[in-house]
Image: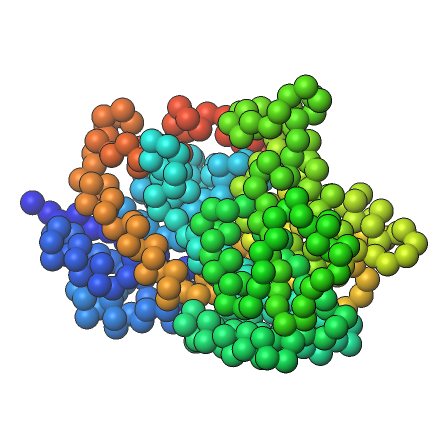
Length: 446
C-alpha cells in the first residue's frame, strides 16, 4: 500500500511571511506514528530551516504534485495551483473578498478541493484551527510602537519611544522582557504630563483581545468600566505613572434602534440591522483604540469617517485619539477609515479626516491607523507552534478521507467537512452564496 503524501508549501505572499502550518517535530510524529510521507518546499525565509524538516524525515522538494494534500498558511498564487489538488489554507474568500475571487474561480476551474482553516469549527461555532492570541500579541506591540512614534512626531518624548515593532524582537519572550523594562520606567518616572490620561480602549474580549490585553497588562494600569469613562475623564484624578484600560463588549457599542427594545446579544447577532452604533460617545476619551472584534457588513460601523471629520473640524481641543490599532482589519469595515491592509514593511498610514485623505507614515494631521493583515507572521516561531498544535489532531483523519467519491461520502470529520468551501471544483452547499460574488467578478471582467 502506497503511503499518503502530504505537502507543505513555502509561503510566498510577501517577504515577511515566515510561518509554517506544521512544525518539524509534528512532521516527525506524522511520519512515524501515521506512516505518512511529508514533502516540504525549500524556503530561505521560513522560521524553521529546510535542514530541521529534513532531520525529522521530510523530503525537501519544490515539486508537490505527488501530494494528496497540500497545506499552506496564506493564499496560493493562481499560476501555482495544481489541477485536482486538495488544499488547506486561509483563503480569505468566505466574505466574498473581491481580491481573491480570481483565485477561487481558478480553484473551481481546476477542479480542486479547498478547505479553509477559518471555517473549521465545533458545534458551537468556535474555531478549532486558528491564530488568535498571536495576532493580539503582535498587534498590540505594533500599536504601542505606533503610539511612541506618533508622540515623537508631535514633540513628546516618552518611554514608549523605545518600543520596537513586533518583528524587530527576537521573539515574544524578548518583546515582553523589553516592554517590562519600559513598564518599570513608567512606574518609576511617569509619562509626560501632556499624555495624561493615556486611555486604551479594546473592542472585543475574545482570543485576539486577550492577546492584546496580555501585552498591555505588562504596563502599570488601572481598569475603567466603559460607563465610567466620561466621569473619570472629567474628574481629572489620573496619574502619569500608569496607563488606563477599558474593554468594550457588544452591549457598550450598540443599542436597539427601537426605544422599546432592550439589548439582547443573540438578537444582535441574528438581527444586526435592528441595532445602531453608540460607540462614538466613548471616542472623545480614548488615546488609543484597539479593534479586536469580528465584523461583517451587516453590522454597524463603530468609527466612521463622518464622526472623525466632525471631531477634527470643531473649534477647541480635538479628541485625544492618536492611534487606531485595527487588528481585525476589515477594509472600510467597523473602522471605516481602514481603507487598505498594511504590511510589516509599511505598517501604518495617517487618515486626515478634514481632507478625507490618506498618506503613509506618522506625520501630518489626523489619526495613525495600523492595519497589518497578517500580524501572527511577526512572531513566526510562537505562531507556527501554536497553529501546528491545533492542526495536527485533524491530519490523520483528513489523510484517510476519500476524495474520489462524492462530497457526502468523503469520510471527513464533521469540523473539517464544514470547512470544505469547494469540493472537486464545485461550491459545497454551505458556500453556494459565493456564486453571487463569483458572478460579480465575472461581470467585471467582461
